[in-house]
Length: 184
Image (tube, one colour):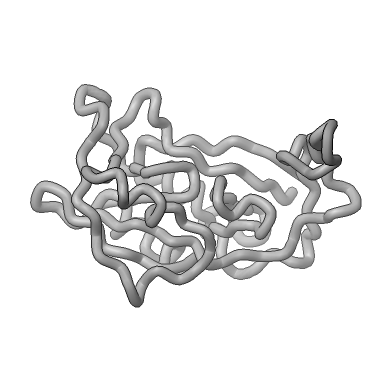
């Protein structure tokens, strides 16, 4: 069975980063466009320091930041999904994953959208449907329709022990939620 999950950092329980200066916020939206050539790590801080320290952090829903331990464990998955941008914080080197694996795999005719009553424009996806033959080698990906707002994970295309979610869970990495959005 093939499943697709929305990847979310659990900011209600675990720490997450914010840039020290507001002008950096717009530059930290990861939208499938390369950032490596101009990347200068912004100074960051942990917004909720009394939350648990996890292995996953974020600035927003388009960005995934991994602790040094998570980067080491998940490196094969991260490198095939996009750019690994350095993010130093208090003597540790975190990694910001800029997912550049942006795939046109959403089945437009079968996907259900919430539409604007005024304009008829698609606002957000109510029910996802994917073309199963369009997934790539990477478990981690984005789709053009939501590339600025979510990171997706596919599983069921490989041996389960070779998949991202299994690697996260078997290593005991914490701070991430896999929200199932589709299965076939």
